[in-house]
Image (cartoon, rainbow, N blue to C red; front, side, top):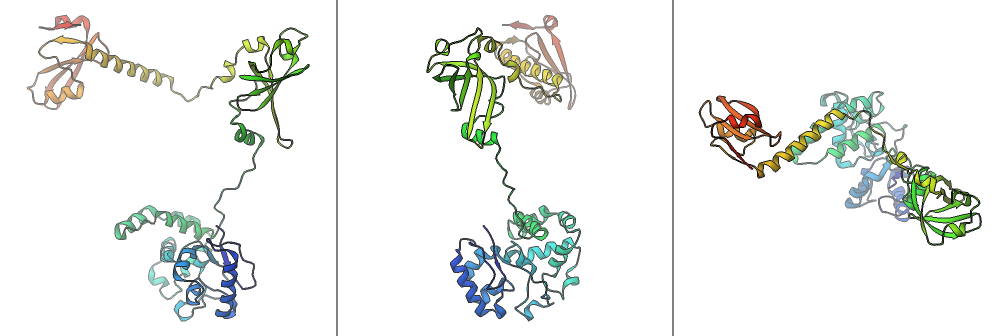
Length: 392
């Protein structure tokens, strides 16, 4: 949405303003020229006081009505003494409902007290912060998150996004916020039309193509994505000379190695040159499809994690499959064993499955209150435990 700039009745206006077309705007300007002294709109309040807009329309369109500041006009200390006083906030996207927030942010950024600006124009601090050489640094030092939380706790106002808008407008009023439109490259156009990218269509890859036309010196093919391709007669077979009509047939699907991707955006031409020689196809394209390893990948940690996951999976399987007859055996993990022994006497133990596999058991021993020791046992020691019977 482009803003409507109110300067004078003879100035050129934007075509649109918040859904209002050019003709009501021109009528508004002509009417405003008759009602406002000198034919100029000095501030946004005059849209209401001059009867140019209704309250609802003004509230909906206020942020798009830009009142450019006149350097020749001076800001008086008391705005209410004269209605024809300009306000720097009228030259921003900030809505009049949020003017007090903008003034508060400017005051805090300049580290001023309300007494310091009591006799000044309400937006005098806004002019100061907008003209300050270090305004970006000072505004970025404000804790807008805390400010937004306090406003929500006090009045349940959700103003976090509004605070960001105010900060941006105080730094660069009505600046272009849209990212520059990038010029599309050849591959960008090809990707939008076919879905092919540099990863899916590059020299060395083997793809499947369909023969669409056979000539004496070449064969026309079509890729699955719809891109046209060509195979020269010398790339149809390992031996020469080659008659394309003998090697392939129309409608046949054959594998081909990408030799070159030719893109001519100016001529609107996209085609691929391929080779279907058995020797080229037999070599494969694994070296071209292989993903480059990350140099920062921690292979040792990866191996440990894989081993741990495998042990946990084996433990879950063994836990349901294994039966052990012993009064102290319980299907607990370490946390469950400690919770169980918390109500037992010192020296009591729990024999439980081990995450290391079926050849291991774990023993949790209550040494003292809130003090436990976990011991791992090999299978060769299991028979020495009194009353122990391992049944599979």
